[in-house]
Length: 96
Image (cartoon, rainbow, N blue to C red; front, top):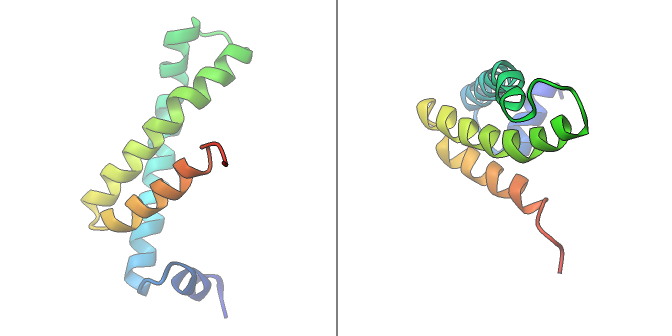
């Protein structure tokens, strides 16, 4: 079984949906890569420091999730990415 079929089985989607999901991930990653430096530089004055890393994780993660949801909606995969976002956010919550 190839990687494509593994993704289909893991996500429980069709081949067309796997392609759409991969496109959404690619667009989101590219958008965040484009926005990361100017957004974080605005808050840190352009310095690469520990503050840069902290602000990156505090600001960019929620923005990533928003873009993921937006692109997912545009490509008709909103429900998939809604579930994906919930899983991602839940990993950062405290375990009780």
